[in-house]
Length: 73
Image (cartoon, rainbow, N blue to C red; front, top):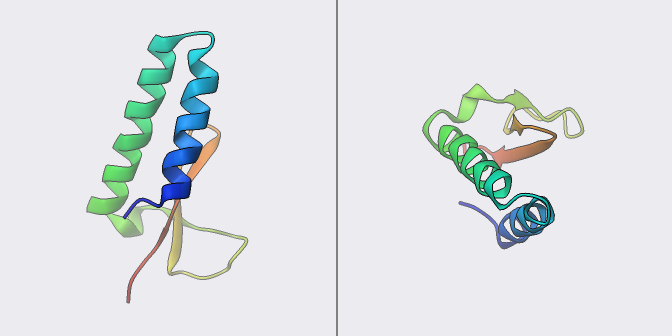
C-alpha cells in the first residue's frame, strides 16, 4: 500500500526535477515505482530502518530517497 503522503512527496520531487528536465523526472518516477514493486514482491530485501530499531520496518533506497515499509506479522 502506498500512502497519500508518499504520492504527494513523489509528485513534489518529480515536479522539482521536472523544472530542469522532464525526462529525468519521468525516469526518477519509474525508478521509484520499480523500488516500490520490489518491496511488494520481496519485503525482507530492504534494510532495517535504524531510527526505529524494529526488524518489521524496512527500507529500500532510491537515490537519496528512501521507501519505507512496515511488514505485517
